Image (cartoon, rainbow, N blue to C red):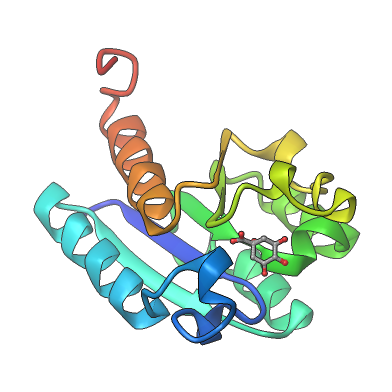
Length: 153
Ligand code: DQA
């Protein structure tokens, strides 16, 4: 059975392409997601994507992941990064490996964006690389699931 990776997007990321393009770029979420699914196909991995503006829905998804056979998460919690102990607790509860992704470099922005409730639990964090950050996170996840992450430098 092919490995399964869920890509989760938090609030307002449905507006990518029109939302503050100077910060978040001109690429829509559906284009990003299509590219990620295609990349997964090339690597023989199933990639499923999900976006929600609702904290509880994201928590429900995270809780459902082990049952659904998910092997790895790529997650942009968006503004919940900086506020949500509940999402952090859900990630800790399922104990699945995940990479935290941010399109923008949150450390170059307002001070309230510098802290993440999620980073301590993440395998790694990518910020500031735009949509490429998702692709790199997915590449690492695929390598890691294939056991080749330590040989690719
Ligand atoms: C974001 C950064 C967050 O601070 C912000 O609230 C977002 C998007 C990013 O991808 O750069 O909504 O996670």
